[in-house]
Amino acid sequence: MTENPVNRRQFLKGSTALLALASMGMTGMNFIQNEKPLKVALIGTGWYGKSDLFRLIQVANVEVVALCDVDKNLLTAAGELVSQRQKSKKVPELFEDYRALLKKHKCDLVLIGSPDHWHALQAIEALKSGAHVYLQKPISVDVIEGEAIVAAARKYNRKCQIGTQRKSTPHLIEAKKQIIDTGKLGKISHAEVCCYFHMRANGNPPVEPVPDFLNYELWTGPAPLRPYDGLPHIRWWRTFMEYGNGITGDMCVHMLDTVRWMLKLGWPSQITSTGGIFVQKEGKSNIADTQTAVFEFPELNVVWQHRTWGNPADPEYPWSFKIYGENGMLAGSTLQADYFPYDKKEEKIHFDCVYEREQYPEDLTEDRIELNAAPATRLHMKNWLESIDKDTLPIADVEEGHISTASCILANISMELGGRPLRYDPKTMTVVNDPEATAKLRRPYRGPWVHPEPNKV
Image 1 (cartoon, helix red, strand yellow):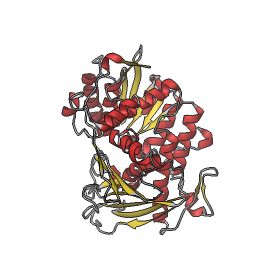
Image 2 (image 1 turned 135 degrees about the vertical axis):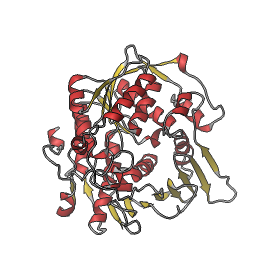
Image 3 (image 1 turned 90 degrees about the vertical axis):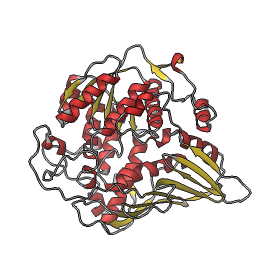
Image 4 (image 1 turned 120 degrees about the horizontal axis):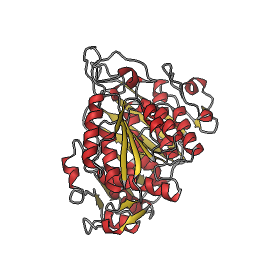
């Protein structure tokens, strides 16, 4: 895969983030041009699945050959949208079952945007089929699922990029380069990550018949079968632990992963968490509305806090990370970053979010698009394709995504066990000296689905 110089365009002249990206050969306008279109499939055609796919279409020569979803309405609408966006103008073949899709189409690339409880089985099957995989975060709902995905990616020698695209966010790349990599903060011994968004669905909808356009049995798959109480799409499924890992699994994974990337951190040595449903008790939701977690590294704690009620601690940074050094603090989010020096004589440094509205005008009419995140996702897709071409690990390689995901899952296990400290050993895949916690590393699967094992992928 080589870059097409005809499509290399400069934008937002003067942006420090752009200059940094240009020096790395990662300007957002580079179009990866291969002789034959790469065959692509998307499993899970909801909001973010389509968003990821459209970003890929914008930066690479691809043909979307197949789409899969258990909701016929979503699937049909996605097919029409894709036909409008891709060069061939063809409607991809539509599938209800991902297994049928992978059996019929030998894809080069498979994107997975399904709910979290499906990530492991679908990613492993896609990797087995010979496809390189772009998998949304968190990569799994339990720790051993994550170990199995990593094992599959290595066994079949496929590149698996995880959708933790803060690593490809222009202003955060520049903040890392200017502040972290230069040692400007001095010794770093504390970091905080947080989310104070009011994003916890908490209604009490009645049980109702399953609509004929939704295969609810297949949507549920290996998870427990809850009584059907309306379409699970968008945020409803996320409010139940049956399908995910709450706000920590959804939002902490991004910011913890960002701190780990910036500071070159591996596995936490110990994880402790407390929390629960302290305020929003009126609805069906069973995820915590309040949680604190401590991820311990050598001479450094990363502390997570979320509340789905009340005001954010810092209105400028309601979902963010803050890295504290002896000389100053770096704050960052999807929208901006700021270096705050402790020395009053030293100037604060601000990093603006890079947008690409002029270069990609179709972004402006895309439903529910996150304009601030689109450039990052485009760079993330490019990095994934370049890793395939050069046979290197992508920036958000599945193993890194697994460490960040599993750390959040272990925080939830600690909370469930009354806040006791957990030390996970990735070599033995056990929680050290804690059989009760170790038993929770695998969630029970609903038959006939079988839990994946790292040594059997």
